[in-house]
Amino acid sequence: MNESSRQITTAAIISYITIAINIIAGLIYTPWMIDQIGKSHYGLYTLAMSIIALFTFDFGLGEAITRYVSKFVVEGDKRKEAIFLNSIFKFFGYVSIAIFVIFMGVYFFADKIYVELTPQELHSFKQVFIIAALFAVVSFPFKPVDGILFAHERFIFFKSAVLIHRLLTIGSTILVLVLGFDLMGLIIVNAATGLLLVIIKLVYGFKHKIINYRTKEKDKELMKGVIKFSVWTTLIALTQRLIFNVSPSIIAAFSGSTQISIFAIASTLEGYTWTVATALSGLFLAKVTRLLKQGDNEKKILALMIKIGRIQLFIVGLIIIGFTLVGQEFILRWVGPDFQEAYLITLLIIIMQIISITQDIAKTSLVAKGDIKYRAIGTLIMGTISLLGSLLLAKSLGALGVGISIFFGQLIGNVIYMNYVYAKKLNINLGSFFSQVHLRFIPTTIITLVLGFMSIYYIPTGRWLWLFVKIIIVFLIFVLSAWLTFLNKEEKTLFVSIIKRIIGKIFNRRKKEKSDV
Image (cartoon, rainbow, N blue to C red; front, side, top):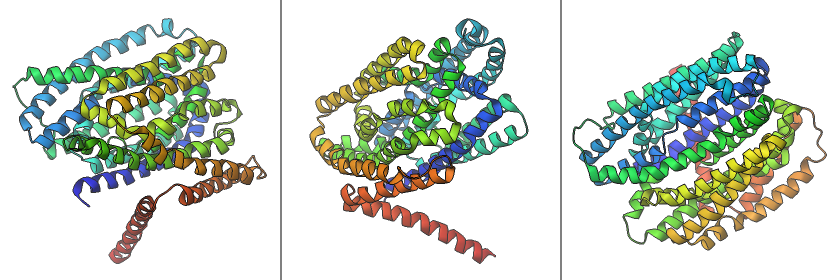
């Protein structure tokens, strides 16, 4: 196994460990957190964080940074890398000043924007917002570091840092809520641990001399290409932010804080699904960039797309099928009957991921080739449909109306249009892709849904124990059916080797601990 493959494999394992911790911790302390701070305050927390996320996105430059720095690393061109990064860091510094002005506008005109909030809710919102906004402005100029780490394939460090950050955030959140610091403590903890993560990344980058930006040279042609590429990545990032980060504001304007909380639960579950299924995303841009420099790259990219797509389908398929069978009862046990509407909303906003996420290599190829505008157009279509639909349906249907709008936006913009692009612009044989990935998954889907429903139908409800039994049954049925009808020999060997590797590390660690004693 070469260093690149080792980095990807190990980083993927760390990613899934982080995801497991995120999900388990979130499932345990989210209902407890809602109980501690109240449903209304949870809605206000979600609203404040959605506004921060809306304006502190990286303008899509994360992909641009990874793409260009990967290219310069492959070519060994340190000079252009320094020129590029020098301009990028300056840009992010200027934008952080503009973001500060915008946040001040939101703070002072909040009562005019969120007319459905009560005076007390408005006061609490402004307190939370000002702290989150200050952290966002301070940390924003350092966002390019993530793209640099990915371009240099420092995946193990990056994923490990994220894991440590998450553990610190969870532990600190529990501590401040136990000590009774309420909503303010929650937001301060998020800001402090986020700042610590930024510092860790910067120290690593400078220590290993991969943050190369010190130069007075300029290259107008290079920056013209960067700007042209970044216009489209900015449009993608902005549109994606609009879908989930503006939705709480639309709901707040038409339906109030309770409906925000319902949408927040659905959005949280969607985030878990997306995070698990895309743990491998971003790890292949450097590899795809190298493939595009070789001959006969269309067949090689298709082969990689099928290989990664099948693994991602196994993961996202398990989540969506499992949630379909036990999701409603899970939400009831997790956050209570007031949030039951979140089940249907969650299904609506995750179901299209079963196609879009499995085509991640095709999206990466567009980035590597510089044909990012087609992805931008697809995202714009998706965002426009989602937002217009939300404005029309939020008043009468609340959070459900937003969920319906997002579903149709994803279907038309992220699936139908993007598959047209993959076929026409990348010359990807989608017939071969769907036949080897999705068509072969149909038997697994049918078997799991039918046998899963029959197996759990007569099991009692109302207790966590019985819900866990149902989840285990569905999981075993899915894995067994996928093993028999979907996974090929190479994939079975891969999963077995990963399990052996994890078990081996656990036993080796125990042996070391005993020997030290």
